[in-house]
Image (cartoon, rainbow, N blue to C red):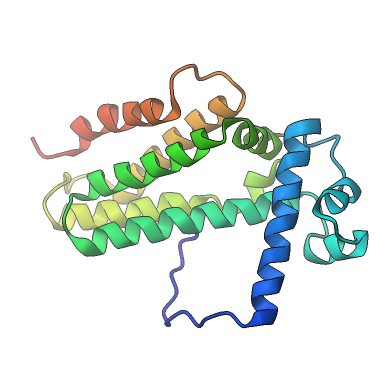
Length: 207
């Protein structure tokens, strides 16, 4: 969900880079498994290294602190949302609000597909305080820029601050996601996210 998009064509990774990326992913998978089984505070980097079948020094080389695993996961998911939204907006075949709804529903489906692991990840984020240092405002800015585009198209009221709306959306989705991670949301995450759309849209679209 990072707010800065690439400005050059992606260069295919070489063998060394692919190997490094695969190793980092293996470590991330091992970290999530450890967080799910033991909880964030009880899990150790030594255990994560053992689960990933790598040396302790190798794990520390890629992720010096335990919270670095969470930061990596946050950046990956932020990037997925950003790229998905940009692609939908560039296609021009749906409104801005429908595009936002589509990407957050896709994210909700992804979280629900492995509920136990992803709830463990959300609990770990809350316990670690990592969201305070992850630049989480980037997604609110991303939504804000999309809302500004919707205003240019005449889809959204022009008298409202687009970035305030973007933050309202982001904060609402994030709040639901945190409560879902704690097991406090009984309905499917997709349905809970739809509620945000249903509540916010009538207040920001032209009458």
